[in-house]
Every structure is written in C-alpha cells, then in structure tokens.
Amino acid sequence: MKWIAPHAASARARSLTARMGLVAALVCAPLAQAQDWQPAQPNRGLFSPPSATTSPGGGTLFLSATFGGESQTLVSGVHWRVFQERAENEKHQLVAESRETTPSLSLPDGDYVVHVAYGLASATRRVSISGSNVSERMPLNAGALMVVATLGDTPIQPNRLTLAVYVPERTGSEAKLVAPNAKPGEMIRLPEGNYRIVSTYLDPNVTSTAPGADGTPANATNSVVTAEVRVESGKLTETTVRHRASVVTLKLVHTPGGEALANTSFTVLTPGGDVIREMIGAFPSLVLAEGEYFVIARRDGKTHQATFTVQSNLDREIEVPAK
Image (cartoon, rainbow, N blue to C red):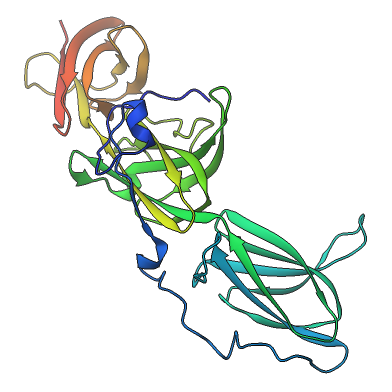
C-alpha cells in the first residue's frame, strides 16, 4: 500500500510518531491499571493447587496466562482451546474450550495441544495427562492499543471515522492489515511490536466505512492521518491522532448568496491538479483537509471555476459564480 503523508496529530509523550513529523500521544501504563484489568485474585474454586494424583485414567488441567515473563495473571480477554493431539497428517480434535481466566478442565489420559488467544496475540503448548493433575502457566507477549481521534481538541464521533491498524513490513511500503475496523476508545489486544494507524475523517454523507486496500474507505476524502506506535507487553498504549479539516458545501450560484443551481457536477482538485472528489447535486458536502483547493462546476454544457481555502474546524459554503 502507499502510505498517505500525515496532516497532524496531538502529543502527550514522545513516541515513534515523532520521527514521521506527526504528533501522537503515547501513554504507556500497566494494563492492570485499566478498567477490568485488575490483578487476579486467588480463586480456589478454579485454580487451587492440584493434588498429587487423581483417579486412574485421567486428570485435571489447570490453566493460566501471564504477560511475558511477568507473574501477573491475566484476568480478562483470554480464550482457551484444548485439542487432542493426533497423528502428523490428521486434524487435531477440539475437546475443551473456555473463556474463564484460570479454567480447570477434566481430561482423560492422552496428549493435548493447548492454545490461548488474547485478541490477536496467542500461544500454544503441548501437554500430557497421565493419571495426575497438570498446571500450565503460559506467557503471552501481548499488550493493548487504544486510539482516540480529534478534530482540533474535540473527539470525532465514531460514525464519522474509520481506524485501521497495520503491521509495517521491514522492507518496502507494504504492510499487513490486522485490525480493519477498529473503534476509537476501544482496547485492541495485540502482540508486542510496532504498528501503523490510519485514521480517516469521513464525509457527512458517507454510509459505508469499509476500508479499502490502503485502510481508507473508497468514498473518503483526503483528511487522513497516519501514526506509528509500539505496543509493549503488559502495557496499554494510548494514541491520539488529530485531524485538521472542515466540512465544505459546494454551490453554483448566479449571484452571491443566491439559490444553488440543481443538476451541477463538481470536481474538487488540489492546486497541482490532482482530483480529490467528483460530486453531483445542488449543494453537495465533503470533508477536506486544511489547505487550498480548486473547484470546477459543470452545468448545461458550461464550465465554471473557483479557488478556495479550507481552515481547520471551520465549516463553510463555497460559492462558484455562474458567469
């Protein structure tokens, strides 16, 4: 994909975004401080010390997960699956599944594959049950990302925004899309590593927010901000991206302040001639990033044109005189 140069972002702490000329706020805090991510309390009903033996022919598998090498047990957001191990060319059979943080599973003797997922992060381990209880404590190199987008200092409504999260490739400009429909303010659970965020401020009349190959909707305009962040294991990374844009309404008029003429085709371009958007109607609206633009209006076989400037957070009407 081709990365779109950022317009602006806000900053509360230094981060990888500073090297891109962006201003993005990165605040890393232990996940245990976030809501519903408190340190686990002992639960003797689910995770009591296993006894030395059980009845012949089976045992209990006690499971828990931690952040990396830390001793803190995850208390939410985990999904456990246990598969019975089969021959190399055979599919493993799912025999147990749980979303409890520290499940205890009774299993017959045999070999199993335990898989734990925390959002997009996961780990796998092979275990054997042979007439006794088994405890497995599985480390996850994972953290979480929370993105907030603003117009100036005002948060943008979720229905006016799309967020996409990528894993940048080490070579070239291509990247892997890992979270195409992220929501502002939500925790996105991710493996530890570097990520790229693409935030798009949408037109008022956009009804579809499905991102395209580059993470932006097909009918989005040019108000796009990108930022790079690093997610660390056991920490919540908060990032604020700031858009500088406004809603512009186009009108073809005979006189200043006059009635908009219907059945008009508008083309909005950059000063260099790159087409931003083509629209049809009496007074169509669109979001444009701060800057200078050129508009061409066509009606009844005649062409009219005007230049205008967009200032951030200043919605306005642009009148094109029909000469």
